[in-house]
Length: 173
Length: 182
Image (cartoon, each protein chain N blue to C red):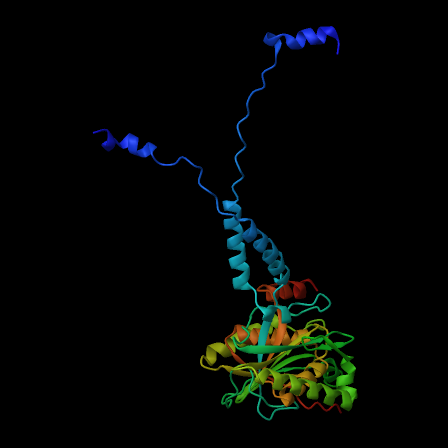
């Protein structure tokens, strides 16, 4: 009868302390890898703007950029006019040209391009042409890169996913 | 030893009895290990060698944009950094010269196209790789130089061209405010 007593059976087991796995090598590995990876992490991650090219426009060579490049049926152009152009015409700002629509001028304010007005103008174009994806930005040589990026950005914000970049042949008389 | 000390040491009743301390338990590092594993997985997931190539340069004042296009999954980018006074080309950060050389020096312009063509060829040797040119320019660079870079990139055979910016969802509101204050 005694051999069936549960307490007696339990006491037959060895009472040694369970061995912990040796974690020191894996800790060393982690302490090497993690600082290395943290050094590679880019804290200030930059954004990207994809670019398309217009076929046979201006001086920029053609190419298939940004996943597009098909024929542009309804052509909307944004001309960013430079200060050299303004010296001869007394107009600094931007022009929006559409076939069959009068050219919309967006004058600069105190020498700064009026992006809020451009934003409204693009919104208005989007409301009229809901399916239009292509838009062309023509930039004069002396326009700053930051102004070009802001213009392209606003186009993309309003759903013009295929933004074409072109440099007009500028002649000053 | 003094005799009084000898006597006191022989007195068993006055002997100090040290309390027996329990053995200190070993510090459990399981939670630390768990934490390190989580950090490691997070870092491995987020890190890529491409991010190193397109890391921002503190010497460049990037324009801000609301939108952010993703680089192609199979895109291999060649960075071109245009500072106000110099141009740095490629992942090896080779000094090219000044931005004015792009417009005024036909030989240097041809050198750039030759270099970019070699880069395109080396990228295309990788399976399914897409050629991407990544332009990182300072805000104040005239677009004339940008046009020349884009022209050289397309002439060399790059399929995709990206411009580097800093993402800022509120730049238009800030710009509007600054215009109103003037």
